[in-house]
Amino acid sequence: MKKAIVIKHFCREVFGLTITIHKGKEWETNCYDTIYYSTITDGEGDIAFRANFISRCPIAANYSDALISLLHEMGHIAMSEESDGLSAFAAWDSYEEYFALHDEMIATNWAIDWLNNKANEKLAKDFEEKWLTAK
Figure 1 (cartoon, rainbow, N blue to C red):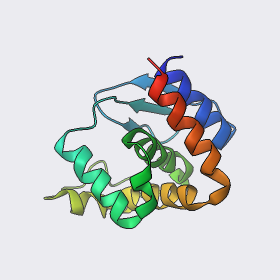
Figure 2 (figure 1 turned 180 degrees about the horizontal axis):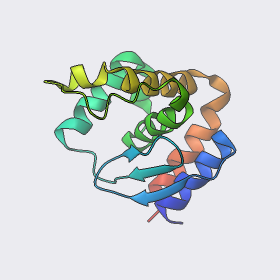
Figure 3 (figure 1 turned 60 degrees about the vertical axis):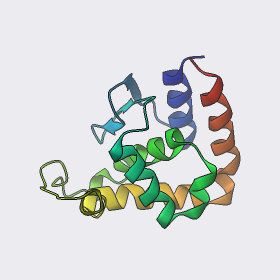
Figure 4 (figure 1 turned 180 degrees about the vertical axis):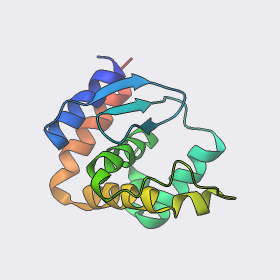
């Protein structure tokens, strides 16, 4: 199974919606119906994102960069009505400043709430297993 299909199935299970999935240079979304994923997660921003996420949600240390990145992007979609739309244009001097922007914060908060919900544990573990074997 391809990684894009694993993501698409996961989004359908969580949202009940079909999300368009594309491979990209980094994890991102249009905040409505499309998610871009990356298999490279060792960049400075990726490392800072993981550290920030785990500092706010220690159980995230048990999960892959792919899952927490995907959940964050799904958070942008889930919280789009509460978005101020300014994060894409905001100036920031550090990753911590970026992660504190309103839209980034609400997307991560959604992801953390989802991950902390015990009812979602099986879905998270299933995603992890499928992601590891996907091409």
